[in-house]
Image 1 (tube, rainbow, N blue to C red):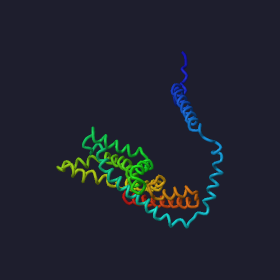
Image 2 (cartoon, one colour):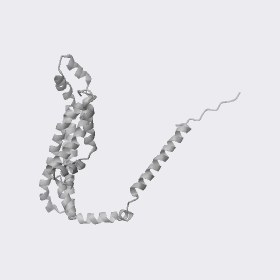
Image 3 (cartoon, rainbow, N blue to C red):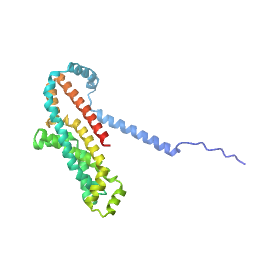
Image 4 (cartoon, rainbow, N blue to C red):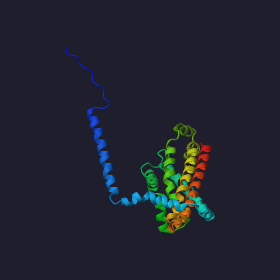
Length: 268
């Protein structure tokens, strides 16, 4: 009578281990290939000299030119207006788009929903800086181009999160209101809107917080705000002014982050 030895336990079968190692090898090969493509035109002398250049620029930034700060108040106000008005415009457009994109509220899943989803994807695929470049070329430089760029970028962000919130509403509440004989408008007003209202305000405030950061650089392409001053200071190599602008942007972003957190805490 032959004795059967117990089989040694293994986390993966030999074939699975071979496939796993093959996958890792392919990943490393892909990384090396991508690295060669990205670095083939790199001038490595500039890369090795980068720390010295960074120290040199950092030295020119000190001390900051605090006397330049009063000249930044109007561009800062413009930046806040770009972010706020752009957010409001984007939210207004995103609301109907979100209801058309949600499966449980769209009038047509075969026609209107794909159109709404296409609008959301298009808005989210193009960065606000690219929107600003296009709008500056179309309507000229200024605050209007910045506001529209922020609005067009906000539609996709707000629309996507909002339509997902609409689809996640409790169907039992909607069924209860429908059972009372309520019409579509009443179901929407009393069954869906109260459920998504906290998410709506939270999404809107969060997007406003993001838009303040994005609107601060739109002036680099002529859309007004602090970015316009930044571009002018960089053009004349006024690094002591650049550091003041950067610190002001940092302080504004930190303050907007605090305001956004407090508002979301109060809502949720």
